[in-house]
Length: 188
Image 1: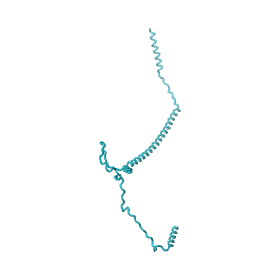
Image 2: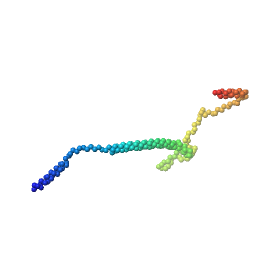
Image 3: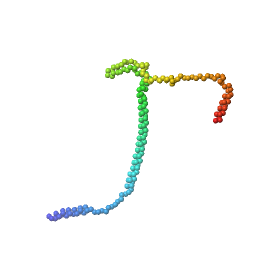
Image 4: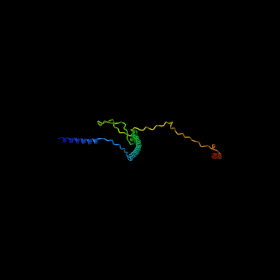
């Protein structure tokens, strides 16, 4: 009986011994290895070139956006000026004085006595009289009359004909005087 018990004990001891042997740590000298430089330099170069190209593309796109924005601002200014011009024309067309004047030119007349319509009953109040051109209101005031001081009567002056006694007797004297005057003018 004693022999079977001894076997497992020796067996466990031997397995434990092998595990202890395997588990022991040993100092291993450090191996220094240098990473190859070519892949690192290539990677850094590609990152730099990519960054520069990216900045150039970004700058170009920003300049194009700036040109587009300035063109749109110019177009907006032009459209704002056009809108203002159209508003001024519309205000001129809506002018009540102009509308009334064109209505009178077309033959429309403002009635002298107005007639009112009651919307609830549909009846009119007031005297209905036809409007005529003679009863029309004057939209434009009459032209002002100039005072007599500003519009005097024309003054006419009659020059009497020279008499025979006042006429020069020697026409040669007059011709010599004009010749002398002509010589003076040439000498100047």
